[in-house]
Amino acid sequence: MITERVFNSFLLLALTSITALAQQISFKSDADKKQVSLGEAFTVGFFIESNTDSYSIDQPMKYPSHSGLQIVGEQRSQNVSYVNGKGVIEDGIVLAFVAEKEGKYRVGAAKIVVNGKTYTSKPVDIEVKGTGLSHSNFKNNSTQPVFLQSNVSKSNPYVNEQVSLSVKLYVKDLSYLNRKRNFRQGKLDGLSPKIVKSSPENIKQELVGGKQYFSEEVARYYVFPQKPGRIEIDPFSVDVIMPTTFGGEAVEVRSNAVVINAKALPEEGRPKNFSGAVGQFKMNASVDKKEIDANESVNFDVEISGAGNFNAINLPQVKTSKNLEKFAPKKRDAFKTYDSGMKGKIAEQTVLVPNFGGEYTISPVEFSYFDPVKEKYITLKSDSINLAVSGSKAPKSDVELASDDSEKSSDSIITDKIEEITNDVKEGKSAWLWVTGSVIAMSAAGLFFMKKKNNSSDKGEVIVPKVKPINEQNNFENYQPKTEKQKFVLVEKTEISPNSIKTDLDELKLKIFATDQKEFYQLQETILCNVAMKSTNTDLANFSDANMPDKMIAAGISEPVVEQWKLLMNTARQSKYAFGGLSENLEEVYEATVNVAEELIK
Image (cartoon, rainbow, N blue to C red; front, side):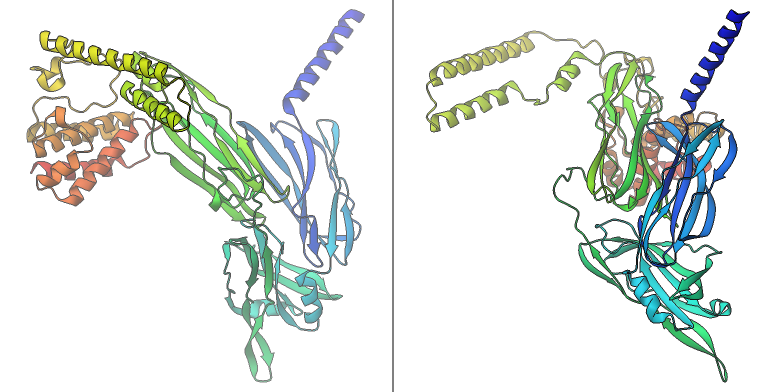
């Protein structure tokens, strides 16, 4: 009986340990800024971080101590991010604080009980200084019934670092907030601005010079300095209807000018691939599958997420080997400017198609950015990705060419050697000249006799190819290339006539509703090839995407029709390798194909 109880206790402990390891829960605190001006609000967030949402909060969060600070706002925050393909859930509360006087303050530790365990956050230290622009203007304006105030979150940022620019209207009488008209923005020369939509409930009570004011943020921007040095932001202004003896009069209220002294990004340690991105970012690179067939597509995705200047991000380009074909990438932007800054992600998807079977390696990609908090450059590097491709192997000649980076012929190698010897003679290093010269002469003679022998054998023998070229086949339908899959199906019929094209167009209309869109695009590609060859009287052996547009124009086809043909052809070919299709309206694509076909064969 005792043995059974011991065994059950051990089993319970093991299961509890496994569950704890799987969940990976932590509790953290994070402030949006550690140094603020007097009267300026700042936020501190308290977040549960977990790789799953299957946890239970046994006791709600115990608020931290905040002596000398006043809580002026509270909101719930939840965010899901992905790091190296793994999801991380952040769930918590964000508190907004304001200090009434200068000094150093501490937001204490918060506590919360999750799954029976107590978690404690770290305290956050904040410094409130009265030397900011806002404080001096508060003193000057504290006797006014209405005044406008401009303030920046940082007066000495780096180039491309995001800076919050806030414009607030302060009034003693709350009714004045409903009397504002015609807000006018100051010049933002030297800055790249992003406007933040004001919250509908952003009216607060604030102490200004020891007096109570109602404040409303009438505008908020996130600006990014574009050059180092002094940048002056002109005053903003707004009209407020003020009461007078004869009713009301519009009075222009102007804010203070704000000066930013932008710092140049350091030259020391700057990576070669740095494109100007400043902020805090993460990178994830992945493929949708690692085992495929030859001529089957695979999607390679690169995603940059975080906070900062997304407009300065250049996504890294994937490098592929010779037999791994790469198509033009598709870019997706999913970032916005929030109250807390520009956040989100930017991603790019590249379609890769292996031409042959074998093992392929996608090289790691790198992305570099400057972190203004750590004041240093950071380079993110992905892992290399291996693809296992089933199918026929690449021809030996292709493998040899792919492994030879120089790709030089024998004649060019001999020429390089002769140039090397000439340089050595000029420098007095000719002791080995005769030996090397003899070797080169023997190599040249050998090449000469080999070429002569090949020429004589060519004249004496007629080599019959195992498979005749397509244009020499008497029966094209009986010809089948000896490969597992064809990359592009250009034609399927030997005779191209208006009737056969009309039949194909009727079939294309039925394929609009096919389960697999690739069937539609494959037939569309065939039709476009056929009408192009028909209009230019070109056979398959002389067909190519490069020369057909010129041939069609020479045949009297208008340039707009030729451009439409090129667009449809390019889309049809890309769609066969795009994961999930191209999200196009196939009915519109069909109508465009019909119009082009009619123009080319009329």
